[in-house]
Image (cartoon, rainbow, N blue to C red; front, side, top):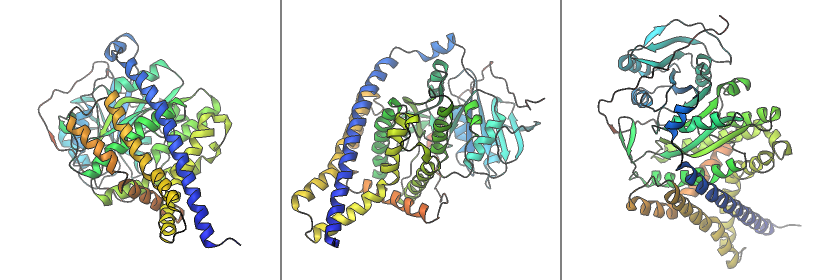
Length: 489
């Protein structure tokens, strides 16, 4: 009969084996990502984006901005978007029945006026109450609709838009001026691409002027600094490697671009989803690759979107709990991908990775820490095992985080000051001793809440950017034509 002591001992070895597998996978991700980012960095030096769009037939794009109770941030967001560099784009702000002054701010600052339109719902969404246009800014459209959540707001805007490309951003996102030029280019070069994502970077501590990042900096909050390292690790290593394997399963909700016809073909975003950004990508991969195995979702590291991250423990906790619930939901809804050779590396490697290490990982990691501490205190595990466990649990994280900062400096060099690089190196060391375990606990909490039936979004604190504004002329492009109509007419 197996005793409790033997069970604890076996479980310790199981967790150690699990951690060693993670180390091996991350080393593989690092090698692949480092090689490909180096190639990408060399390639982009010879590309002049504006010249490309003067020669080729560019594709018009619609920027969708879902907004619920965003009165403090909506004006600066729209002003920023109106200054982007692209020959033909439309902005659709979707007011999801806000209870504050979001719509009033748009009336006051952009002189929007109600326009007649014929409702035409290609995908399901809540009723559109009214559509507003701005005489001062012909490419700005505002939708007022019934409450339905972020995914439903995106669907409503897709119904209104007639442009072939759709990009979705959060209100608290800041796009670099040439962002659209970069994100549209892959769609012009490859008809098999249905979605493109880029790198999300942290704007906390940066100086914002006229809606754009004027000077890259770091927040004084160590919680925000830890997240800078975390985001570098996630985007530069994880997603770029999965792109190499044609196995992208998530594009950040802060900024992503899609073919409109592909979104309509799969029925749009899933209303009420806990993680609509991941769910739509997994569904696009699953349903469209069944029809055409050449279908691709790609990641481009130098397409940069800046966003604010939480600097309070409570807010960050709510965010990570929701992210975990969204990941679990997406994996469960599309479990047919699991070890399915029909989807190539996506089905055989990437989807199982997300299942074992993203969904189940926090449960194994947190329980492993608890069992290890109890076992060591009771003398169940020897000293040499304890050293191996600590090395696997902590030291590999230090190495990977440090490599992320080094790769950032070698490739994109967003942080110009030596002081900032030193701070990030220190953060890459310290985050492994407390912060990473804390985020694992929040994901563990999300796991428990999801399977006990608590599947609400939770509350997130909303905070705008502190910025200096000057009078800046808003570009108006002659190529733009507003087209809101019933296609059946």
